[in-house]
Amino acid sequence: AQSVTQLDSQVPVFEEAPVELRCNYSSSVSVYLFWYVQYPNQGLQLLLKYLSGSTLVKSINGFEAEFNKSQTSFHLRKPSVHISDTAEYFCAVSFVSGTYKYIFGTGTRLKVLA
Amino acid sequence: DAGVTQSPTHLIKTRGQQVTLRCSPKSGHDTVSWYQQALGQGPQFIFQYYEEEERQRGNFPDRFSGHQFPNYSSELNVNALLLGDSALYLCASSFFGTGNQPQHFGDGTRLSIL
Image 1 (cartoon, rainbow over the protein chains, first blue to last red):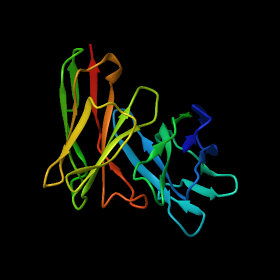
Image 2 (cartoon, rainbow over the protein chains, first blue to last red):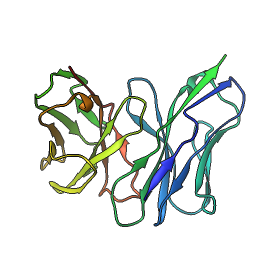
Image 3 (cartoon, rainbow over the protein chains, first blue to last red):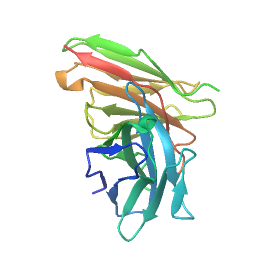
Image 4 (cartoon, rainbow over the protein chains, first blue to last red):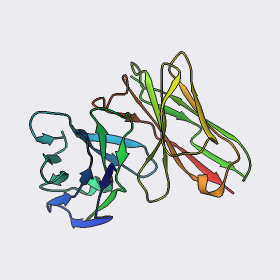
């Protein structure tokens, strides 16, 4: 069965500290990978995506994620977080063939402390 | 360039009633997907519409139905509402809907069932 696991439901971190949000997936077919961010009372905003090519992808606001096929992971990292990064982060997969749906993880609430 | 718009923002219904939620996709997008996000959970795929047809469906009962119009906008209908239908309903649009086309989300409709 296809699934996405985000083991950390909440991650508290002090401002300017580094952070890693973990994402693992399970799939019998090739996948595309995404990180979305959700601020309170808003929809999901695409943060970054891995479709093909370089396994390290970066966003414009300092986040990066690395696709690791052998470990079926797509962890999200930021070297120095800001208060404004406080939000819910969702990892998602879509599939190269066979289905059009996205499968989302249960989310990780990142809380940046002053 | 308008993004994905959903209406209404909030809705309160009672058990047994019926509800219709509306979505206008991002300009240039032709595919609409609907997701249900329960409190503290990740979005769950309901169904996807392309060329005015339901192209794929998730594990939701027939009480959930939809429609796509020639202008690509879409409606989600839920009949015989249950308390468990209380959730944030998200609409996402994309071009063609294949896995390598990132989905863009609206801010959702929060449905509360009393």
